[in-house]
Amino acid sequence: MTPISRSGSGRRSLATLVCAALAAGGLAAAGVATLEPGAASASSHREAPLISGDPQYDNTDVYAFVSPDKPDSTTIVANWIPFEEPGGGPNFYQFAEDAQYDLHIDNNGDGQGDLLYRFTFKTHVKNKKSFLYNTGAVESLDDPDLNVTQTYDIELFQLKNQKVKYKTKLADDIPVAPSNVGKASMPNYEKLRDQAVYKLPNDSTSFAGQADDPFFADLRVFDLLYGGNLTEVGNDTLKGYNVNSIALQVPTDMIAESSHQPVVGIWSTTQRRNAQGYYSQVSRLGNPLVNEVVNPLKDKDKFNASSPWDDGQFLKNVTNPELPKLIEAIYKIPAPKEPRNDLVDVFLKGVKGLNQPPYVRPAEELRLNTSIKPTDSPKRLGVLDGDNAGFPNGRRLTDDVIDASLQVVEGELVGSKNDLGDAVDKNDKDFEKSFPYVALPTEGSRGPLAKGTTSGNDVRNQLGDALSPAGSSGSGDNMTLMAGSAGAGAAGIVLIGAALMWWRRMRRRAY
Image 1: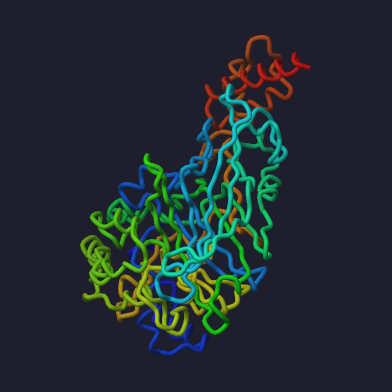
Image 2: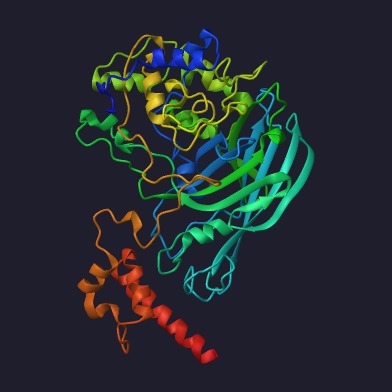
């Protein structure tokens, strides 16, 4: 699709597609006008002033979907730390030790959490006298050469009116998949990732570690919507960057209220411990895109500290959105008339007949009807293209939330037909077929990476003897290790190579 213009692709209008989707799902026609998947144009990376300075606590995206290979279970994926440069060593990317990473589930539609899964992390360093993240090739998560590691605990809280009824410790000291330093340091990273998939009680599964950022978009949109110039669009700005992921797969009957009320509302929060030892909420995310573009600057930090049952205070941001006015000013596409009541229902309630629970209290949550089985052929526009298993019924990794949201915020469902998008229709990496589904992270030795950069061998040839410390033959394992880290820069290669050689000599002398 072409950003802020009609593509001429011949695709049916979204209003027609919505009608078809509703008919296919047996939904009432009255639901058509409510199919707005969030009025915005980018995901929640650095979405508010305060959290943009604290990436360890910044939740970038939340996904929730019925597991495609295990349809009696539901998978939740939440990501933190936006724009992780893969080569960002020697201090790579860790979950914060002074944070509570929480996944909330509202299973009766009252806007309050009924279940809360809490993840807390600890960092472990084997040799604090070394600056290295790893001191040799890492073959397993318990490899002594993995110098810096993390583990996490999981607690499950059952709540009533935001008070804890029961608290259960599900697991202690689960290993975290490390940052993918590079081929020399982690020759088989997929093996390390597999070791970080952990079986919990009650047929649940968890994962925590680095992953490719599954969000895809051309973020030059923030340059005043491409500055009116569409000749350079279609570049996935997030290509080559990683995030830290938490994934949880649980039997659906553990989180849904009943088979008669299968809709769950899901959101995540991060709480950070202050100097007095108390925790306060600093990040919040349910539906994608909301705090990024819907809320103005004056409300962004407030939204991150707020709770869904208080979302009525942000209603005007939805009924009178800024984005259509900006598009009108730059591209002369008329903004739909206000108030935008067509945007209200799904933002706060879910779509009636699809993923709106009975007696719903308006609250911004990612709502998923867990009774709708996954499809073998997901469509990137989800419900808008007749695929009721996709966005805004939850959110799958492959769902194109940018295009769906942009088209609807421009009034597709109120008669302003358009075919807008950012021309980035899928992630740069294929997702996995089984839990945790996220793609493997880009390794640091390629960094973002190899966008036009030279290979390790090319760098070695260019630098010549500079890669060989005094007394070195310039061959063997040491040279391979140094060349494998070429993407980190010539000076870093020399320093790391020399350090590895020194460390090996010291270890040989010790034995």
